[in-house]
Image 1: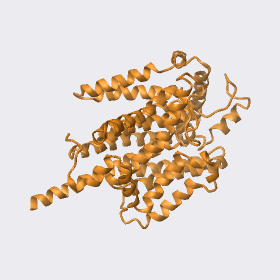
Image 2 (image 1 turned 180 degrees about the horizontal axis):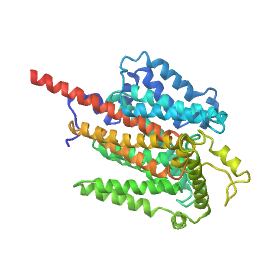
Image 3 (image 1 turned 30 degrees about the horizontal axis):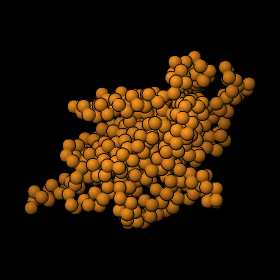
Image 4 (image 1 turned 90 degrees about the vertical axis):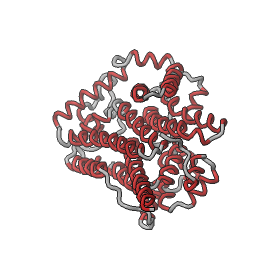
Length: 439
């Protein structure tokens, strides 16, 4: 695969690769309002500055920018249709959510949470249609990484201040979706994978000090996974390392690098966290999860098609166990995206969820095949990073209830977006080849 150095006609992308603030800002100012509003939405959804700075918490900012994105979309002349199997699968999944809500034990509870999945559907379609060029994808990717880095650096310094020691609460992210240690760790899996691929690919465009600073920033993602005390995410990280070590072909330097990184992360794992792995399956937290899963399997057997109802888990379990579920005698969520999907949405919901994950991996494989023909190294490596983040989510999600959180749905949006951009690059370069042949 050739060097990332491109032709003179691609100077704008070259400047963006160099991560020069003036060039980046100039490129942003030239973009349509729909793209800018979409990026603003992600800022207020992920970083939640309105929660960090109460003085600006005077409007529902995320919802406002989402509406502005939708309205301004119609004046963006660059928008064209984006066809992909995941579009139909996502709509079918929402249909199952709707049918499950109608047939639910408590339809009023399902209706109360209706906006969550409808919002992700809207964000998904807005993202895949608006982030529709290589330039926009790069700008969006950098901003997405910056939003996650805000959480990553906070988690890293928080862990450093306590001497990289163990704490039961782990590490926390921005208010909202990432406040809990388990959810924060999943986002750091996604961020760490994308950031390391980004830096490793573009390091040749930066000076020595800038390169080291950006490597350190990217590493905060995986370091935070180690410090977050989330066993599921740490298992997910280990599987990512194993799978991608096996994928490295004739890349001795890459294998050495990933081995060293894995060893360093393992070496800073607190002894107390290692003890939690030794006790896994026998400690009270594990026993509680196992009890929820047993109950989940019973509910799936009793309601196999559409489940007990979207977001009905806590209410139904409270009815069955008014004094709480033993051994801790409490009622919590199911602690597994797979149990959550199957129990609340039936086997139909679980099937569609797994099918979407499979199509996401297939989409990334097709993207790599397309990009390999044109030697676009950055987007090629980002497709692998999206695979890694998705693997991390699917593994960690077996132990936490995050089906309706942004992780999966935004990953799908980025995967389809990258696939669409790769297809456009392919068409553009094929047209150039045809013109050159005619000349």
